[in-house]
Image (cartoon, rainbow, N blue to C red; front, top):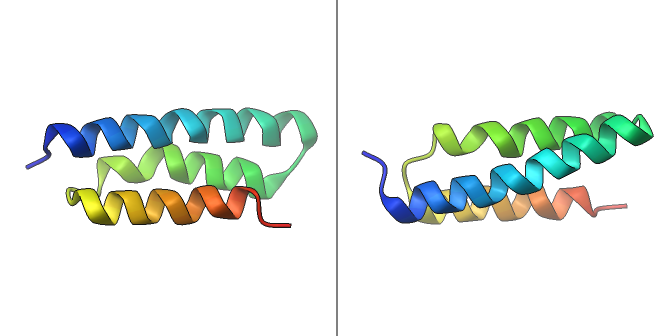
Length: 66
């Protein structure tokens, strides 16, 4: 089952995903919109804290990739 630290990490990355989605919507950037939706949704499916942090960090890194 999910633990508190996994839920907090999921909420943190969901907030980042929401702002990435808003940025992508304002600037017509499909990459930012898709990564934002991914960041908002993946936390519901990953019960391991280390995997949650790894995937969230990688997707957040891709937000700033040129």
